[in-house]
Image (tube, chains in turn yellow, orange):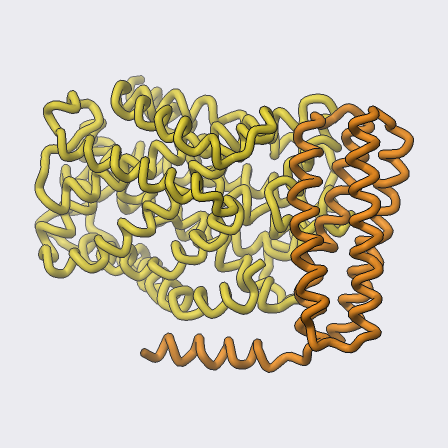
Amino acid sequence: MKKALQLALGILTAVGGFFDVGNLATSAQAGARFRFQLIWSLLFATILVIFLVEMSGRFAAASGKALPSAIRDHLGFSFWLGPFVILTLVHLLVLGAEIGGISFALQLVTGIGFQWWAFPVAIVIWLFLWRATFSAIENSTSLLGLITVCFVVAAFVHHPPLHQVAAGALPTLPSHDGATYWFIAVSIIGSVIAPYLFYFYSSGAVEDKWDRSYVAVNRGISVIGMTFGSAIALGALVVAAMVLAPRGIHVSDYNQAAAMLTDAFPFWGFVLFAASMGIACLGAALEVALSLAYATSQTFGWNWGEDLHPREDARFSLTYTVAIFLSALIIAAGIDPLKLTLFTMVINAAVLPFVTIPFLLLMNDRRLLGRHCNGWFSNAIVVMIVIVSFVLAVVSIPLAFIGGT
Amino acid sequence: MRRFAVIGILVAACSGQSPDAKLAKSLDAPASWMSGLAMIGEKWSANSVPRAYVEKSLDAAGDEFDKTTKSVRESDASPLLRNAVLKQLAAAQASSSSMRGAIEANDRARVARDSRELADAGKQLSEIAEDAAK
């Protein structure tokens, strides 16, 4: 009964925690520019992320270790230091994009420029992390994040042509703007397979004291939670395709997307959009800040844990404090949140090899995982993910130059 | 090293476009803004979005129109294309300025008219960009 409850809560958490500023920005751009044609990239990325999240949870449950500490202990500090530095910078950019998303949501409802909100938002995030326990953060933001289901409801209200939606699930070559098409496809993959997810999820499993009996619960959370989470991103894509594309709006600024729910919900649509954006980004900002603090503390062997009092893990708390304020600086400087988000999603895709290669090595370590090691099928999937991640790493930066919007 | 070479080749390929094609590519954002403002004006008239949001959107669109106007004037594209683009940008700037006044005056009929004009300007700018890119 306790496990069933945890599974249900975990699924809700995964649904609420999946959707963030990157999913919103890339789905809105994909739908607005190419209607349903890029649904395949969302589905493809969802399948990959299900496998990776399942593996990071299984790893934590079977070994009792979170990924960053296991990489350091088993693959060596020198192996991990380079990727760690790069992933830390990426975390700071993602955190900046999430703070930008919350600040922009506040601009929508108050009319006060987003850059003025950066530091107040940073203080709220910091207070949340300073005061709350891990489960309070996880459950409250994720349950609130379920407001994003409004995108799925809006998609149904618009009665999209189902045969075109289904056709979009199969990859097709674009009839126009090829570079932009591939840029958005890569951005979607980068937004779904965000590196912070795996460090947060595996460290969270350790915080929640998962053991080997949680392997099945983890599988349920990964598959069902990520699938439903992806449905929200799909809902945003479909709404953009039905509302923005026919009007010729390509979403070069968040303001252009903010009215996308008002066709389905004339009175509440605008508020729902702002609330969805603000809450989804708040949840993600907390996860990214924690993920960065987890990875840093585990890399240097410091005390860590959101459930510990800040005085018991001072360096862990200092890490997220510094990270939050550095990332807020990016937004306070007035950098456009949408451009920062899209750039960051491409960088996410570019650094994927640093995330995926350790998976392949650690998930085959029988001393750590025993019978929970990867089988041939999981290994085949990871090898495919490693190959895809290398392709993305090579093409993503040039695409940002040519196809960036 | 290899990655930088690929970037270099691709950027060089991109910069090898004709001035007309380059200008056409830069029209995507202003055309999207014209259509976006048309929708936002329409939604304000229907009481679906707040005034502060429309004003912020008008500011952001105005910046984009100014930036594009400047880059069109400095472009090496054909005079015919530049004039056609500048005409649509001027029309959009006039309509958005009129929309700002109409919102202050709470004149919904004028906002509806300005929205239609912005939608037309956006459509025409997209067509100009498509023709120039061919």
